[in-house]
Image (cartoon, rainbow, N blue to C red; front, side, top):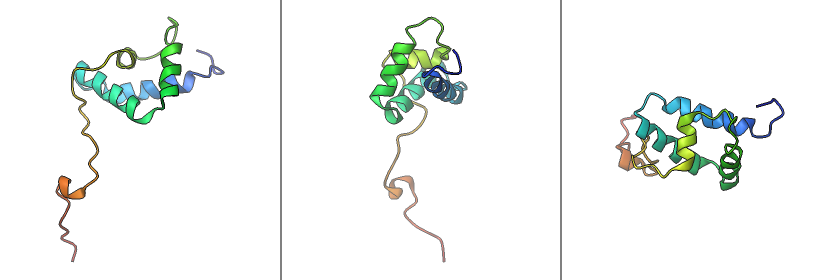
Length: 96
């Protein structure tokens, strides 16, 4: 991967996500990576990375590569966002 490669940033970002999830069991890590990429990346970004990774010399972390190609069976270790603070137990304030 050269410094002028337009896919370098996508690979770097996916590898950073994989590095974050590396300490989880593999099935949860793959699920977490998949969930993050689907939630925060555009379909175009995902498609570009998948197409780029068809090449054998892509540099993508194996966990991220797996997350791109499968629908995970495990749940992500990261909880879904909750928009209602009462659901997280933050409804009452003890501020005086």
